[in-house]
Every structure is written in C-alpha cells, then in structure tokens.
Amino acid sequence: MAHALTLLCLNVLLVVPVAAQFTSNGEQRWPVPYRRFDRRPAVDSYCEAVYPFCPTGDRDGRVPSVRDRDVISVYRLQTPVWEFKYGDLLGKAHIMHDAVGFSSSESGANYTMEWYELFQLGNCTFPHVRPEVFAPFWCNQGAACFFEGIDDVHWSQNGTLEKIGELAGSQFNDMAQWVQDDNNTGIYYETWTVRSDPGPNATVWFESYDCSQFVHRTYRKLTELGAKLSSRSQTNYTKIYLYSGEPTYLGNDSAIFGQPALKNLAVDIRNFYHTFRPHQSFADFAVSLLEAYEKVVLEKSFYLYYNFEYWHLPMKPPYMRITYEEVPLP
Ligand SMILES: *[C@@H]1O[C@H](CO)[C@@H](O)[C@H](O)[C@H]1NC(C)=O
Ligand SMILES: *[C@@H]1O[C@H](CO)[C@@H](O)[C@H](O)[C@H]1NC(C)=O
Ligand SMILES: *[C@@H]1O[C@H](CO)[C@@H](O)[C@H](O)[C@H]1NC(C)=O
Ligand SMILES: *[C@@H]1O[C@H](CO)[C@@H](O)[C@H](O)[C@H]1NC(C)=O
Ligand SMILES: *[C@@H]1O[C@H](CO)[C@@H](O)[C@H](O)[C@H]1NC(C)=O
Ligand SMILES: *[C@@H]1O[C@H](CO)[C@@H](O)[C@H](O)[C@H]1NC(C)=O
Ligand SMILES: *[C@@H]1O[C@H](CO)[C@@H](O)[C@H](O)[C@H]1NC(C)=O
Image (cartoon, rainbow, N blue to C red; front, top):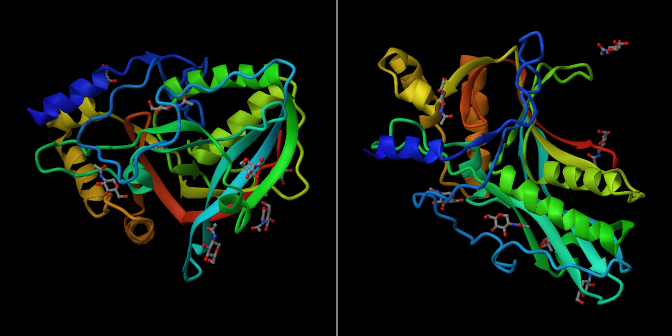
C-alpha cells in the first residue's frame, strides 16, 4: 500500500521537456539534462526537516520589487559549512555553502538569496531504505530561499563577502521573476557530479544541482540581463565528484521496483543504499561519504539517482573526490 502511494506521488510530477535527453541520432546526450517539472509537488510527510527551511523568508517566496532606477549592489557570499580530512584519498576537503547578496542604494535594505536542501544534505545524497516501502525513499527536494538581511559576520569571518557588481532596479526585478520560475521547475538536489576522469577533457555524465550551481545560474542570468560582474579573488567552489565509465540507464521507481522481472536489480539497489545512513548531521555525512568511497572501491559500482531515475555507474579510479576549484564569473 505504502509502495503504491509512493508511486502515486511521483506520477504527479509532470515532466516539462526542456532539453532533449537524446541527440538527433538517437544517442544519449551527455551530461544528461537535469529534468525540470511544471511545478513543485507537495513534500511527503515522511520527510522531516531538523531546521525549518527558509524561516525568515516570505511564505510564498515573494521577492520585493524595487524601483527601476534603484541601484542594487551584488555580493558573492561563501562560508565553510564543514571541513574534514581522510588520508590522501579525499584529501582535506572544504564543503562550502554559496549564496548571493543584494543591497538597495535607495532603501538601504539588503537581502540574501540561496538555494539548499529542504531536509539536509545527507537526505539528498542517500535515500531511506524503509521496510514497508520497496523502492528507496528520497527526501531530496531543494529550493531557493530569499530573505531580508545579510549577516556580514557569518559570511566574512571565515569565508567571503565581496561586492562583485551592480544592477539596475529593473534588472533586479527581472531576476526576481526568473528565480520564481527556476524555483518552481528545478525541484530536487543532486550532490554528485559524475565524470569519466579527472582530466580536462573528461566527459561529464551528470552535473550536480546544488547551492553553487544555483549561484552560477544566477550569475549567468544577471549577465544575460546586462550586468557586469567581476571579482578580485579566485572564485572557487566545492564539487563532489564520482568517476565512472559510460553510465547505463536502468529506469524509474515503477519500472524497477514494480516489476517482478527486475527483482534482482531492485534488491541490489536496496542493498547498495542500505549501507548508508541518511539520518545525518554533517559529521555523519562525512562517515557516509567514506563508507560510500570504500564500498565503491570494493565493488566498482554505484547506483545514481538522477531525474528520479536510476543509472548504473561502472566506477573507476580515483572513484570519488571532493575538490574546491575555480569557476570564473561569466
Ligand atoms: C516510468 O517509466 C516508464 C517507462 O519505463 C514510464 O512509462 C512511466 O511513465 C514512468 N513513470 C514516471 C512516474 O515517470
Ligand atoms: C533528514 O536528515 C536529518 C538530519 O540531518 C534527520 O534528522 C531527518 O530525520 C532526516 N530524515 C528525513 C526523513 O527527513
Ligand atoms: C522556493 O520554493 C520553496 C518551496 O516551496 C519555498 O519555500 C520558497 O519560498 C521558494 N523561494 C522563492 C524565492 O520563490
Ligand atoms: C546589510 O544590512 C545590515 C543591517 O543594516 C548591515 O549591518 C550590513 O552591514 C549590511 N550588509 C551588506 C553587505 O550590505
Ligand atoms: C570561524 O571559524 C572559527 C574557528 O573555526 C569559529 O570559532 C567561528 O565560529 C567561525 N565563525 C563563523 C561566523 O562561522
Ligand atoms: C585535450 O584535448 C585537446 C584538444 O583536443 C588536446 O590538445 C589536449 O592534448 C587534450 N588534453 C589531454 C590531457 O588529454
Ligand atoms: C582554486 O581553484 C584553482 C583552480 O581550480 C586551484 O588551483 C586553487 O588551488 C584553488 N584555491 C584553493 C584555495 O583551493
């Protein structure tokens, strides 16, 4: 019964074709385009947030409109959420959180805009393997949060708070409209970036969809609207990589978990995710990443969940890496 209900929830997500998944020759397009939906579905009550999402934002996610002739400063905001070291395998990793700040020269008000997980990072990276539900259960929504205020100390003390440009009020208002659309159609968080190898010519199989990707999309949108952005320092971001040979498409929940013929695959996916703990603080998340690393090295296999569908990744060295690398401003 619970299984049927879960499938029902997924059926509500109507897919909007944005980028075709296949090229005109019928070949798979890489990276696989992140799927956009026509609206954000209600969250399943099984998912429980430890911290409420966007507590000081507008309830309906409204962004205040400013006068067209206002001048809005744009800030690059970054702060470490967490740091850990695991031998030479994952190196010394900084997991950074990114956001964008705005301040109005007319009103003096300032704002923070960020995109993050509704139910924390662990739940977006590893599903819940529940006894009563056959398919692994994901609490993996992510969303944009816009709220008044910039906490200067929070961003600048161990991170970055840097003014990178100015916008006309009208450009800010256009961006506000774009954020609503982006927020309603891009609904789930994806931790992993999957590539064929660490070299510069690697094929990217899947792109992550996380706080830093949101910041990059925002910068691209602002540039498209005519803003000029520049930074005096190197603009580096955290990426969590998997390395694999060409991925194989497996199917969605109903295809895999609803068909007796695929029972072995279904059990294999359940067993794969059973090892990891989605109930996670950041410290637990580190432990789960290390467990994932060890399992992947041993089995050379990973089941990736992307666009609410499973893919098999034939993993290869160096398997997994956390990097802090430069992505220049557009
Ligand atoms: C799952 O995949 C099948 C085909 O493999 C498709 O017919 C079905 O609509 C998909 N379900 C959802 C919820 O996307
Ligand atoms: C998600 O993660 C948090 C810990 O970060 C946990 O307390 C919560 O119960 C998890 N599970 C669900 C279903 O949301
Ligand atoms: C984005 O969606 C979430 C979840 O529905 C909502 O809480 C938030 O206010 C929205 N943010 C914006 C900027 O629209
Ligand atoms: C944002 O506004 C607060 C309150 O007025 C102020 O303390 C802070 O310095 C401002 N930050 C920026 C980056 O404008
Ligand atoms: C900055 O780092 C120090 C040392 O790790 C820590 O005690 C402090 O709370 C951090 N500041 C902020 C605003 O996170
Ligand atoms: C990457 O591709 C370029 C152009 O094809 C080539 O010149 C370069 O040698 C390649 N680099 C590596 C590391 O394979
Ligand atoms: C930032 O990225 C560049 C290139 O990706 C790298 O060489 C540099 O070491 C990074 N900076 C830090 C502080 O990690």
